[in-house]
Image (cartoon, rainbow, N blue to C red; front, top):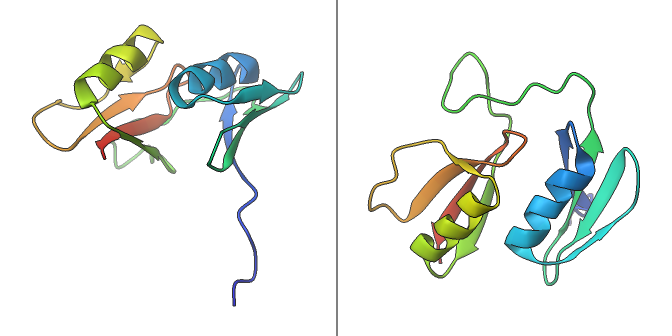
Length: 118
């Protein structure tokens, strides 16, 4: 029996509304809240929350001395079309983007995420 149920994944960032807007464009959903805490209600999935973190320093990937802490895997049907979309929204590629089944990016605040061929 589980001891808990996942409520929300929270990403620290310098601008919660801007980062929630980025992920709303990528995942769909509704951005809710004001100020230092913004929620993204994602249809059919867990919510994401964005918390203002003064002095935020983005993780480095890959870097053994600056751990990424975590990353998001986002399943997509078309890697090329999804890549074009996230780059237009401000994502930056983080690794050589070969013919693998996934591609690695940083969101506008610097958090790593992967687009994964579904």
